[in-house]
Amino acid sequence: MGIIRISAVAAAATLFSLPASAAGVHFVSPADGARVPAQFQVVMAVDGMAVKPAGELVDGTGHHHLIIDGEPIAEGAPVPADERHRHFGKGQTETALELAPGRHTLTLQFADGQHRSYGPAMSSTITVVVE
Ligand SMILES: [Cu+2]
Image 1 (cartoon, helix red, strand yellow):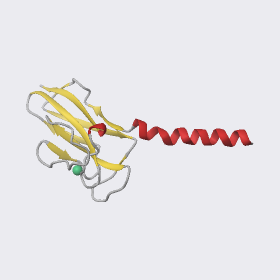
Image 2 (cartoon, protein in one colour):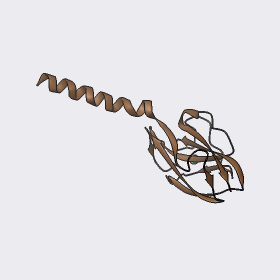
Image 3 (cartoon, helix red, strand yellow):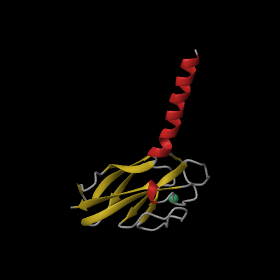
Image 4 (cartoon, rainbow, N blue to C red):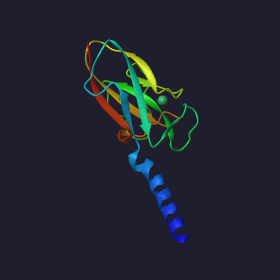
């Protein structure tokens, strides 16, 4: 009995420690370096945190932002809202994007319910070539 209890606690501890160390965002699609048409679909994912619509501040939650030809946003700074900084405040994880031909960087940035960045650790950048 005692042994079973101890291993259950150890298993639970492992499960709870996983999200913190594995927290991050990534593009499901397109792939880094992909050649894409002028209009293409972007699929965004987050690990270790939950997607929640903007508005309310809840620990461990936030929403995606897509930064076109820009940089990750410093931790705590608000993500600008303009053509190059798209907010997905309804909790979307997918969007259609239309870009001019050529090479572009796409940066995924996760931010809290008030659009304050979780910093470069919660960002991911890929390059795409629009044909
Ligand atoms: Cu936002």
